[in-house]
Length: 339
Length: 149
View (tube, each protein chain N blue to C red):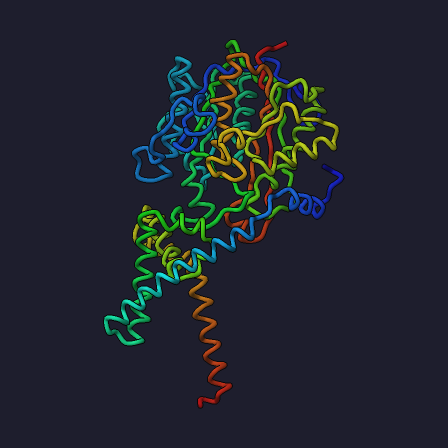
């Protein structure tokens, strides 16, 4: 008997796990953005002394995990599970970072939705009393993503206005069965929604339907309304996705205009930093959540947040074969109080 | 959301995406492409002045332009020219050099055989295949139509 399920896609955690520490590491460009004061480490060089962008990304993720663990005054031996994923083929970043850590490891692929996918699974494992301490982590790197999905860095191409800029950064969250919050209270797991967008330079448009589906389902399942949240924030829908979310959710009867934002819009100054529609990548939701949102919640400037990381689950092969982009969005409620 | 089918949604999204700044792009492409061509003309005049014949001048001009494109790619400038100039920077032979040198640099980490050499033509390859291919077809047509005259 699944006692914790409410509604079609949501679980209500009966022993809400507490976020006891976080860490965020970002590259130089993110470190010049509007959220620069919220990040733990800002790299001066996005290679971070490594021989390749892939190695640099693995180091960013590994160091973010280690930093989050040490911020909680724990050691890797105290952690029972690591949930991590990234964008690179066969999630090599996460496997190479986990190789150094000696923690039982579940590798995830949810593209840019990985932050809330890992938080969902980590929180349910703790609530189910299978573990007391878990780490949830993800990362992305502009240059490793460009070479896998797009063009060489030095190739002189133009980006469209709907294109987004992959965030260089990694974030990690330590969840614990004990602690003083913020707590993860509800989890709404998304379904794949694909309305046939094939343009890989318009991720916001491709992923927005999945986010809309998950957000409206979350409200139906939990009975919450948009006004119950201080902040409703999607992962990386960017400026195009934001317009779609606000417009189509209004048509479904949910007005998010007061408290909605997107991590991809928050992380960069689109005009100054020339990032077109905004940031993207697993690292986008990861560093905005583990940096900005967590710290604002600790300061009690935000008390209840709905984080919906969004993923575009295509590959460079499916794109060449003309397949449309399957979107996904997982929502997690993070609350300073538990009733 | 359920009310909207795929076609309707795709049309809806098209309206939400900011339109490219066509006039600005065309103008910049014209200016950047023009500057590259003027540079080519200067090289040509220079080589002619030093007494090279027509054929050698054509080859020499291409060589200097290709080297310049490759060099500017290597020091990280050509991608910025390409961002401003668009097709104006991509279509001249300097852009062709950029399209070969940039993947060669990018994939050096994967080794000189499967990285540099194998990936070098990942962008320029289609241009070579269809460029050379169509020249062969045109050549055959020319031969047939003129009956070898």
